[in-house]
Length: 134
Image 1 (cartoon, rainbow, N blue to C red):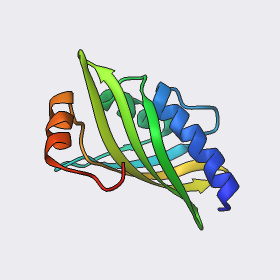
Image 2 (image 1 turned 90 degrees about the vertical axis):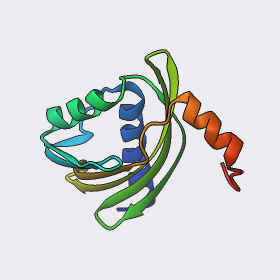
Image 3 (image 1 turned 135 degrees about the horizontal axis):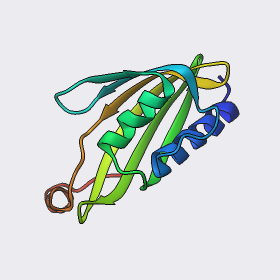
């Protein structure tokens, strides 16, 4: 996949992450999801089930303030930082997505997540670790 096409599709995927609504044509009808949060593994098949899997683990609205997309021969790899508010707290996670495409839509999606950090964990991390890059 070329860089322009990968970035366009990644942009649609980021919109999905931020809103919980999949833009038309984002997912192939038979999309397969393989999701690995810390110490667990879940799978879903079919566009509606993939959307529901996302909504069951994160609220519908948030932001992706940082991201990087690298095209692959069959799709793209996307690294994101995600932030949202839920249950009266501010949350953070980092995720890596490997997306394969069929006919311009995501057909296979692997997700690797650091886990969700509440504000207390974010503060503890900030006090104990000096990151070299944000």
